[in-house]
Structure formats: C-alpha cells, structure tokens
Amino acid sequence: RSLSAWVGLTPRQNSSGGKERLGSITKAGNTYLRELLVVGAMAVIRRARHGSAKWPWVGQLLERKKPKVAAVALANKNARIIWAMLATGEPYRDAELAAA
View 1: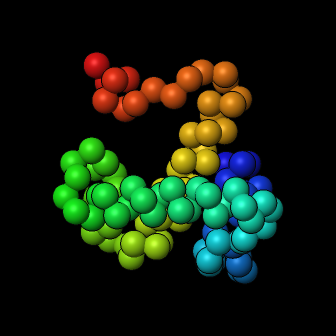
View 2: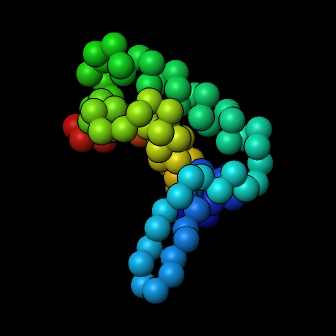
C-alpha cells in the first residue's frame, strides 16, 4: 500500500465522528509514474470490455464501476504487485501459472 499511496492511487480519507468517507485519489507523489500505471490499466480495460476472459477480476469490476474508476483500481492493484515484487525480489507469477 505504501507505493500506491506514494504514487497517489489511494483514495483520500475524510473521517469524522467515527464515520469513514473515501473520496477521489490523492494525486500525491510522482505524476509521471501514476500516469503510466493508469494508461497501462486503461489498455487492459479496453481489452477486457470486449469480452476477454483473461482478466475475470477486471470484468467483474467493470460490471460495477465506470471504466476510468476501474482503471485507477487496476493501477492501484498493479502498484501493489510491483511493490511486493520489489520487496521480496521474486519475479512476476501469472495467476494461471501460480494456480497450476
């Protein structure tokens, strides 16, 4: 979550009286890196909208959210995966290969 927060892909929190309200993304940190992650996510969103079964998580998200909101959520997820890979030093494992 720390890389996502540094890039500015986490929602802004406005909490008061024990009630938590999540707003738009914070847009803090490196603008260029955030833009690259979101543009890459939009490419996946475009492919997933045309019935690609490779990304079931994205398809389910698109049923509930608008495409640009889904792109930011996917960019956030990708940033967390990148952080985990950098922290552990492990290479990327595709979900299909990891399940086998």
